[in-house]
Length: 57
Image 1 (tube, rainbow, N blue to C red):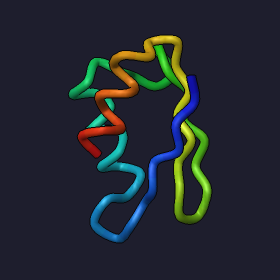
Image 2 (cartoon, one colour):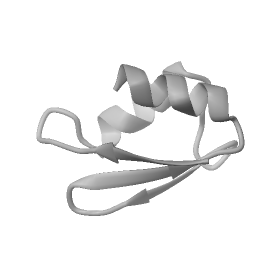
Image 3 (cartoon, rainbow, N blue to C red):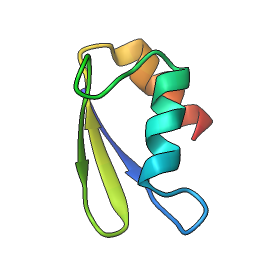
Image 4 (cartoon, rainbow, N blue to C red):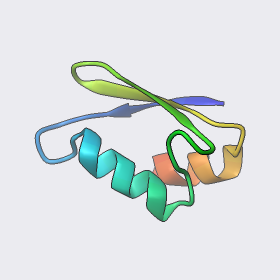
């Protein structure tokens, strides 16, 4: 499953990585993060954790 997380000044890549860790997703452990200018694409086979992280973002 791949989800696109919007990034802003307050919610940057570093904040996203911390957020993913809170949902037991770690890069490069069980997810892959691709950063662009204003979004981050996160892929993981742990669909429930990724969906919950996206909803809470």
